[in-house]
Structure formats: C-alpha cells, structure tokens
Length: 148
Image (tube, rainbow, N blue to C red; front, top):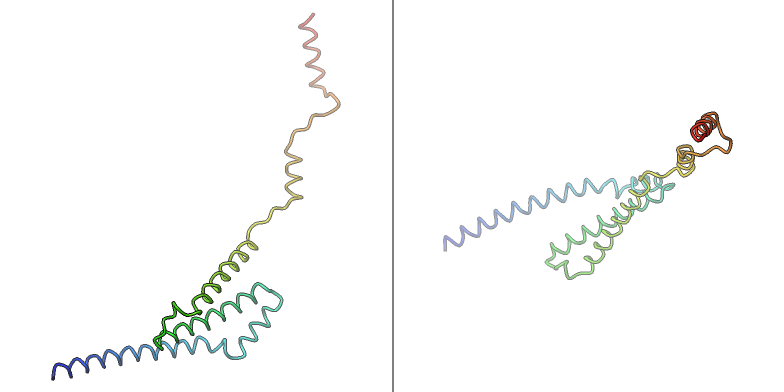
C-alpha cells in the first residue's frame, strides 16, 4: 500500500511537471499570437493591400496557425485528430503554402530580355557582304595567274 502511494505521488509529480511545461508553452504561444490578434493583424493586411501574394501568405499563415491550435485542442481532449476533418484542412493549407512558394520563387526567377538577346545574336552572327572587298579581288587575281 505504501508502494502504491509512492507511485501515485511520483506520477502526480511527473504530471505536475508536464502541466507546468504545458502552461509555459501556452503562455509563450499567447505572447506570439498577440500581435496577430490585436490591431497589428489589420495593419499587416493594410501594408500588404497592394501585393496580393503577401496578402495570401498572411491569410494562409493565420489559417494554418488557427487549425494547428485546433489540432492541439483535439489532442488535449482525447480526440484522435487523424480521424477528424481537421487533417484534410491542414493538408489543404500545406498544399496552398507550397503553391504560394512556387509562385513566389517563379516571380524571383531571372527573366529573359528577348530584345537584348535578339540584338546579341544578330550582332554575333557572321553576315556575308554583297559587295566584294579588296581581299576577295586579290584572291581572284591569284587564281587567274595560277591558271594561266
């Protein structure tokens, strides 16, 4: 009986430590999310108003954060999130993030200046002249002398 009491007290100490860690993690999360829940979120949206790509990144990041929090809520309530529809939503948001990353990378990719490349190729190619120059006339004279 004393052994059972000892195990339960050690279990409760372990549980207390885990709960303290959870409490600290939730406080850190609250501090991290405070800028997004206050008026700073509307300021971010206002800044990104002219750039639809930045606006999409802000919205998807916010949606992913909220859904991740809901995932954690399900876990703490003992619900298996793998069987919940939240999993499909998180996968959809991940796919959107990858698509946005591709779009952002494509916009940063070097672009071909077609006009400059046409000029470069045109000037690099050799073009025969219609009028014979001096060196061509000298060659003809040498050939005629050899043939005679």
